[in-house]
Amino acid sequence: MKIIRDSSHLSGDAAKLAQWIKEARHIVFFGGAGVSTESGVPDFRSEKGLYQAVEAYGYPPETILSRSFFLQHPEVFFKYYFEQILYPDALPNRAHTALAELESRGLDVTVVTQNIDGLHQLGGSKAVIELHGTVHENYCVRCGERYDLGFILAAQGAIPKCLKCHGTVRPDVVLYEEPLKGEVIQAAAEAVDQADLLIVGGTSLVVYPAAGLVRGYSGGRLVLVNKSTTPLDNKADLVIQDNVAVVLDDVAALCFVEE
Image (tube, rainbow, N blue to C red; front, side, top):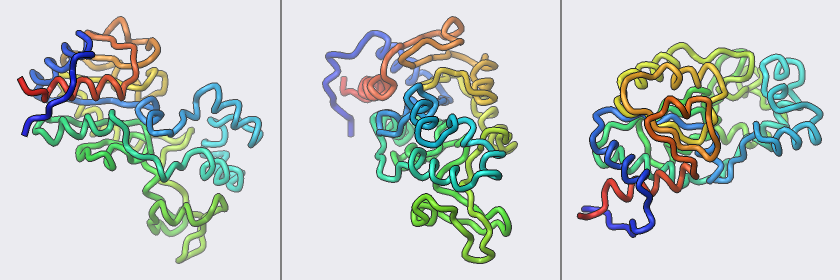
């Protein structure tokens, strides 16, 4: 079954990207916070997020979400985490569903995401590499017992304690001052290395080491989709300064529109 959509408004850039997608053998989509903001998940690194964190919690978000702060001030950490990081009612947006649609249609699409919300999987993508972990997985720092997101939500912002040993249960996400997991960064690097089309969306490419995966790419066409400029705009084969959800939805429409 072919998908028929109104494509009269689609730009030449979207048409070019759609053609490149159809020509590609291995596609990697590398996404950042801008992919999730359309789903109502705010970017804590934004000016508003910085102001809100300092005003309400007394510290900037990068400090609160650091390993040392988690160890020294777990009460503040979990209060902030519960109130500002967890958005359990968020739903996938057009970026998530467009990527899942491309994959479901038989294209080789791997998603490498800096986000921790699990929306790519909820949207239907199967090949997802989560560089910074996920809020849906949590573990006891003492005995290693695993817990789901529901367990953390039930704590209502208090410090969640393990049911087996009463140790602190922390999210299995990469905090500031912590390295990315070796096997995860290796899987992402291999996916990017094998790609002949790398689409980067919703990220300003300033967070390392993740951004280094894009900076080192030389395997084929590089496309940047972001509302603002990035340090790699001059390296890209195509730059689209627009909403990533709108662009990907448009591109998916062109990929599968009935001739």
